[in-house]
Length: 218
Image 1: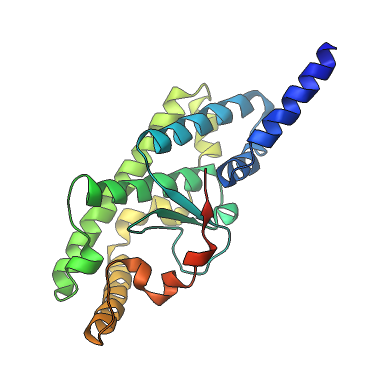
Image 2: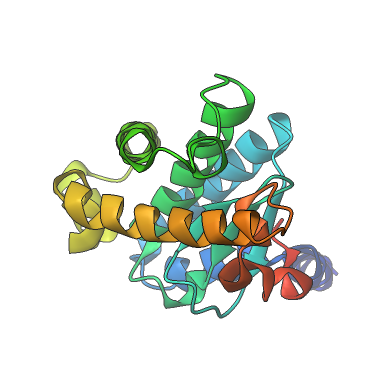
């Protein structure tokens, strides 16, 4: 009877763990040593609680070719192709990086540079890059905080939560990022000047084409 109850409880847990977030977490969890798998569940619970407690709306896109791993929209944060990320470190980084952009705009009232500064590309690139550096620092600190709270040894955590080279070196990529955001802003400005209403980056064709395919994340 006890075995039957445990089996039913396990089946019920599998039914509950059906969100896109859980599916991605479970994928990364499979690469963890058996003795640390429970820590992944604790990390998952922490991240989900952080998102829900702060009323963030996060959407999921299983496959996209926007060139972004995440993007902050007016109505939601979108995480792109998390199943193709190199590891749980990049996954958590992307979530908290985009959450920081939401905080910058809605809490700290820093403005939305891709909309507010379309006519001054120098101001745009400088303001955007400062926000990017802040989001990069915030996301990396959150990962460090999560790891320190876990029972995973530091040397092991450095391997399991290793960030891709692109993310590790992000603060040194200012020229590339500024060039990309200026290109994007130029396109939005052209759309605005041609009479199209631009209220958010979601109006850009490269993002807009995916909006009807967004799924719930958690």
